[in-house]
Image (cartoon, rainbow, N blue to C red; front, side, top):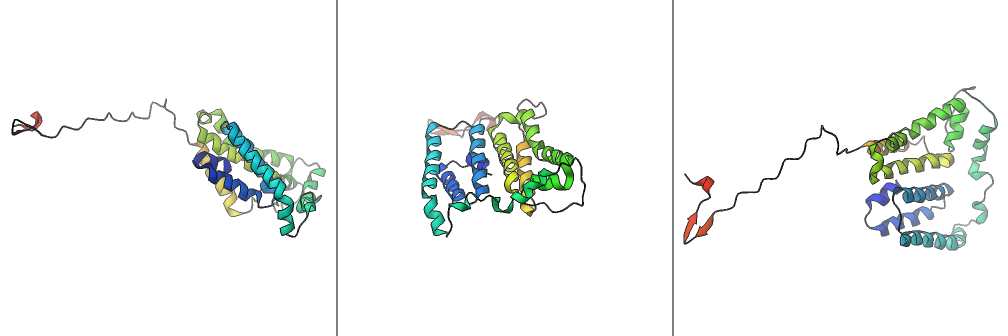
Length: 226
């Protein structure tokens, strides 16, 4: 949602506040998605140097304050370099076994969405799932919608989720895919000015002037005289 929020929010102070809130989550997945979102925003519309410097200043300030924040939470920097990736390393090991198609009963989908899809459906299933997610993006990029900034912001948001799903896609939570395809529908909305089926708006007719006074007498407009 961050690329879309950047597009619709006119007061960028609120946008920078949202960035700070994401940084303070102390979630490595949130940080990864934030980096992807900033790259997507830079793709959607060129950022001015002043805004790039502002984003960099926020990042440096957070890095400087991070040790103090971790100390307040009772943690140390080892939290950031956890070799087990918060338990996700076991899921990544699913890729150690090559499988082209399902070879065992379908199980649950965990945080690392692509690893779970590969484990349940094999390489063919994973490729199909990626096409399923990227379908709206491909349609927009190949159509006239790619010229609209709002459409590009929507597919940028979809791309951020596709990238974040490699760490934690939360696909089993009910709102996740509903929100994903809601944004996809917004991205597919196109207003084509060259469409002949769209009727031109009717021409505006100037309202008739009010009666005017002349030489002490009220004069009616010609249309009202009988």
